[in-house]
Length: 360
Ligand code: KG4
Ligand code: ZN
Image (cartoon, rainbow, N blue to C red):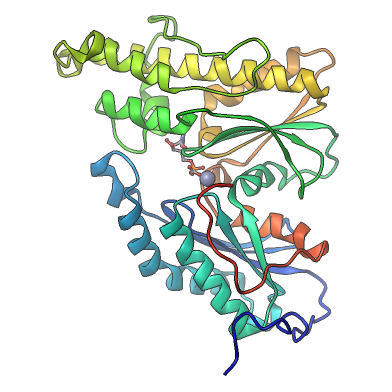
């Protein structure tokens, strides 16, 4: 019987000389089941995303068991659709790439199992992708002449990280959150304010009607040299504002006017954006960055994009800002397949013992 870990696996693969390198990317790290076919790391031939928002919204956050079950249900149709939309056959696909870390282990497991199965059955190389590094890659999809060094800010529901970016294969972590991620804070504050899930878009929408200076929520900078983040304090500050110190008072949200809720949302958003900008500026000064990259779900936030652009324009010398296109800010498989192209060119392949990893 053939063992899945057979060392001759890669040796048996026949690389078809083709004009483009087509990679099938698979993403299941959290609550989106996604597959995409990308040629040469840039040409998006297809991108299919099945979102589970509806399944998780009543819980105000992602429930891992529900996510895993939904991935199992959707993975086959999503991959089939991505291949059909790309109008490619299995012989046109040069490699299978999958995000195997970081994320919810039982969610990652579904994508990893699907990718390993396809790699084995189709005899294609398998490429393991770090989900956060992939988010960073989505800011580079449309870029030709990247000026280095660059600082990358990745802000998502699970992570808030700053990287020193020199090459797609080795981004160096400069700092990350020590507690809640920025997106998580948006989601939790939206839940306190009884807004819809996911919280980021809901807060951004209502904040447009509010005064960002109405309430001075805390900005946690963690010391003058730190490149780490902390967003649990601001979430607690919003909670105490709405329910009284130590939550001893009554929940005031139900009796608040729409203006009051909009003011809280706008003031919270302004505080988070200010911290993200200041830390990114600090990182950029430290490594003398010429370019700033922005990716991850929270990168869809217009206030953050505008504030970061302002920071880049007012720096001396000015810096170039590259932001992921909106449709590739939140989780998708285009970013996975795009980064995989660089690993493909460097022959960085995984074998069939690949496992999901919660951290990364
Ligand atoms: O990158 P992503 O899709 O998933 C993770 O890898 O975590 O990010 C999802 C996060 C959620 O917390 C969501 O509330 C946040 O991104 N988000 C936003 C916006 N759109 C999505 N946060 C602020 N403003 C937005 N417009
Ligand atoms: Zn993500």
